Image (cartoon, rainbow, N blue to C red):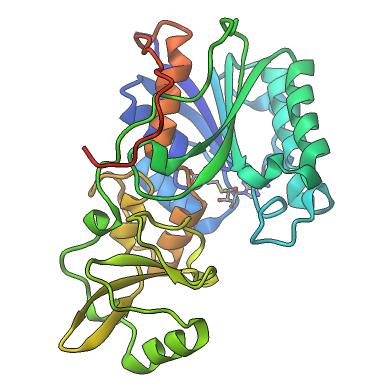
Length: 333
Ligand SMILES: C[S@@+](CC[C@H](N)C(=O)[O-])C[C@H]1O[C@@H](n2cnc3c(N)ncnc32)[C@H](O)[C@@H]1O
């Protein structure tokens, strides 16, 4: 089978690469575009021999090799509810123009883009419409879908809009959304068995959380503390992972010796909740905060792999699945 030639922009740890691999689709990366020093390190470590073309605004599209698939989770801060919501007024919100400039010239067969759900909200409606109409203008059929990681096997409430643009005919009624999947486990099942001491909060820090947020840490199974909404989740699902400095998530363990137990999420737990199997990604020497920043910004590689399978059904590279319109179940298999 011919390899899919990938150009992976805003590449982070290479969620697109991992997704294609997980989907079992033969592929090779012709290059990536990333400006963050630590993302560059982790990308190269995991996908050796691929050239980083650097800042997308500086890429000369005429000098790029040909590719079949363009991917890009373009920066979400301009559209994120956690950010200032400046949209296109924030220069990072206009990086989409570079996606169009490159794809208009290179005309890859398929494009897969990702962003936060709020880019589809009322205040960014014009930007979102422009994204779709620009993709149409440069010759693509477009489908988009808001997907939540928890509907596809991973216990994380992570809603993202996925925009698929293709040169292929999209059959009438075809939807981008893959078949929903049962959870592989709940939040507690995705946690490490042995956690290093330094991840734990001391009793003074726990007291501070209780006084500030009026939360009860008397849980009977390890649960996710949603600091932003001041509650311990009881549905076995994690809140959306974000960069660790946002300090929105803590793990609340079952009290021990009459004392509450609260801690940070470990590196492995972050990556499991982004769809990785243990050992699937090489962390190299990256620090805790660099690794967790990458996870908070990355693609859920489980969702990415299901989307790639769906997309490549259109080209006959994957056998088609029948999508049942059943209700979305969260019970683990
Ligand atoms: C939301 S993250 C995408 C993560 C990626 N999809 C993954 O799976 O890890 C956006 C990335 O775009 C990078 N970035 C921001 N501005 C850029 C630019 N002008 N050119 C290339 N990369 C850029 C950031 O450093 C960040 O890693």
